[in-house]
Length: 168
Image (tube, rainbow, N blue to C red; front, side, top):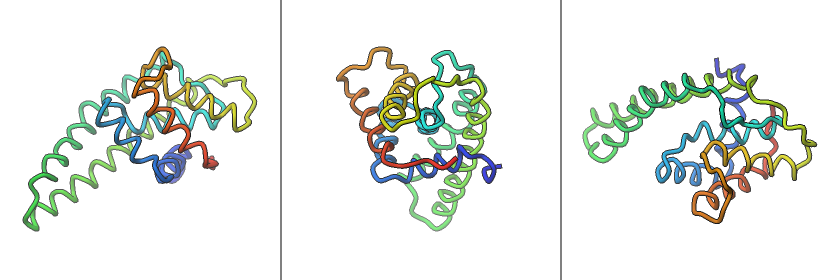
């Protein structure tokens, strides 16, 4: 399914932008934010869409909490102990399963795009950048943008991602 999911391709493109993965993983590990949801917020901005704070994404949360996160935790735990070739094979299998679960989460998020209204902003770089930051704040449930560590990390993520033009 990922071949015809433009969000999958955009997510890969954004995530592979220098510095983006590091900030995303910091936000995931420090604030328990979903990397895919952050990428969705950035992608929506490039589509001229707002991430609604009341987005009905229970299916995404259920998938993430019951399947994706447990796979990630298993992989992290094994990463600390892997020594034998069998443990390395198990680690690689968990990594593959986690990526497949990430793909499902991306498909579930992509299906929500129709619930996200147009921003009404012009599609210039400044507007996309501003909308990207606002969408990230909504994704992180940061009600008042501030100088907090979370806000600064979201701004850093938005700035790093702003340099690319997403296709699709």
